[in-house]
Amino acid sequence: MPAMHNLIRVRVWDLPTRIFHWALAVCFAGLLVTGTVGGEVMTFHLRFGYATLTLLMFRLVWGILGGRWSRFSSFLYGPRAVLRYLKSQRSAGVEVGHSPMAALSVWAMLVFLTIQVASGLLSDDEISFAGPLTHLVSNATVSLATAYHADVGKWILLALVLVHLAAIVHYTRRKHRLVIAMIHGDKQLLATALPSRDDAASRLLALLIFALCSAATYWIASLQAAAF
Image (cartoon, rainbow, N blue to C red):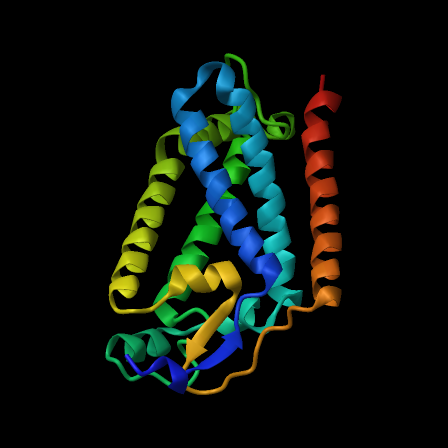
């Protein structure tokens, strides 16, 4: 690894993205534990689910308006780019934000988390919990969503998380400080790169977006009460 004095410090992950990342990790752990225990703690499972929904809606918007390396456009890679990366034919800047392989992991997590949350909103365990949107779809759709949410989706997500953790361990052993960068936001790079915007104005914008997403989640949750 090059000497530290030869590296350039660049702000890659803005504060809203970092908070999103760690908050999502907490929510996923909470969902896994409460969903496994069941019973009375399902109330907390529901709350973690609503929190995850809010975070996913925020990330959707922040993927368009956020810092340079948090935008979806910065980690959209085609099959050729992925193959070149696997063959170590790496273009300049590919390691600044999400690499092609990391991008695949991020997209998979976002897609399957969204499906899992959506299926939860449509699920009914016929005991003590029913999602707020169950009354809007057919019984067959509710049954399908419930089966996926309880028996399929969570295992897909758990597998993706384990692969994600294994990748972090692999890159850490190769002296890539991925976890540290997701804490303070900066990466040590061999060449200069455009930083992500991470000033007071962008953070205030993120806070406003999160508030709007929270309001949207509250409205979705209220549909359950309105149905009875």
